Image (tube, rainbow, N blue to C red; front, side):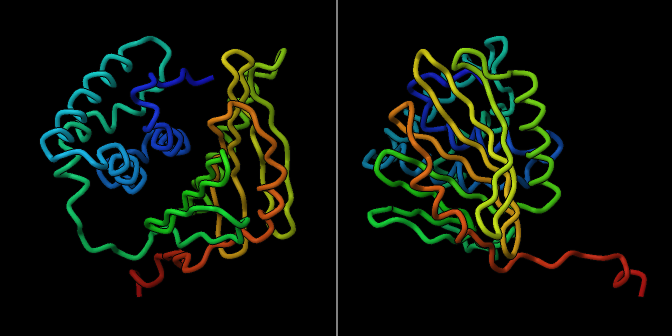
Length: 239
């Protein structure tokens, strides 16, 4: 199982999950920074520009130290050069291009709070946090394969490890991976799903450490992706 981030850096957990769902070769200068932008904006909310820069530089130092620990997920090295200058790099408003992987949508329970950026949704409901990322078909199936491999490598034993199951919510179907730790209590769910209109990678966790996902899952049948870009072909180039 992935080693947990230090408390100071827990706000980067959505970024870690986003990068974990990507193939290493797909993490480069063109990688979507919308998730990092969202968590950094929340991290520095209420701080002066000077205090924000100072806090992010200290976070970068802490992240560099954590990344030097054996066994950690090294994919967060990608954001290491970005974090100290994140105010300038991420928080200056720029026009948004159309979402590359479409726009996700889903009917939600009453009382949810939703942040939408670049086609992705971040949903807070009670003590749950659900992140929905539209995905290209190849990336979604690659993520599903990685989850299958991880579950084989870290099988569930005495409440610790990972387990995998096929799921179907109406027209929405795919796999669900449960990651658990008995002490300290920890639970995370990862989904790789085919949905009407496209494909979705979803992550569900909670500050409670353990939770019943059934109440949020009963809305998964409404998941869909709109404006998914059509596949490109070589025919137009050779015409």
